[in-house]
Image (cartoon, rainbow, N blue to C red):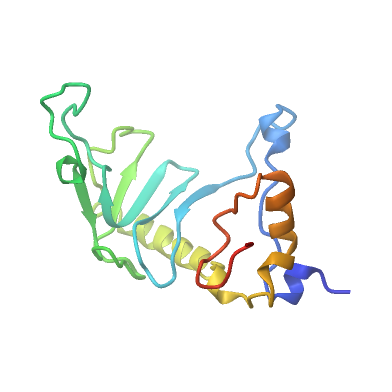
Length: 179
């Protein structure tokens, strides 16, 4: 018997059980990296942090650079135009091998003031490959078959019975809604 996820063509769950580490039963985290975002087709900022403290960012990243204090002074300009932006290659659509990626060592440089990508090309290449590999497992709602009647799905029933009718972000308005 196929599970519903298998029947929909989804890959097996690839999560890690963090509870032993969080609860203090295990002294070391099973996680060796944190994928900030991984998009096979680009489409925005992406990043990865490894267990050594290297953080690679790709794309155009808003509010991701060292800047002067911006608040609470009322004379400080407000809005996205006032926020610092870092160009880590590829603009708004970075693609593998992520030319121009930014690399920081957040252990030695927690404020991420020094981009060391040119000094550490092997680390950039390693993290770029890992980020690309992670992107190959991405799943978006448009990749899955839509049910014939959204209102008859388990998710809609849950929304109506337990969430006061509020739908979650898993519903795509072009594909249907619970009402």
